Image (cartoon, rainbow, N blue to C red):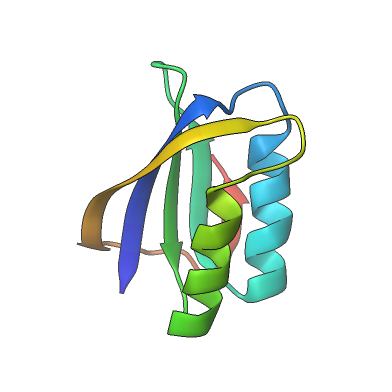
Length: 88
């Protein structure tokens, strides 16, 4: 099951997308990460339950320079057509 998240806070310009990519690949998560025009980051992720739990815990903190204020689940069962994880 794929889930789409919106990450709020100081998350653009701090290495969030590249760090998220590395974390997702290490956990076997499929999907994407991208910056949105409103200053948030969108993440679509799909993986096994244990990997997804670890991945969401990562999203709640992000890389060292980030300041995550809120991780919002905006869609469950989102369509995931990706065979890997990438930056959009």
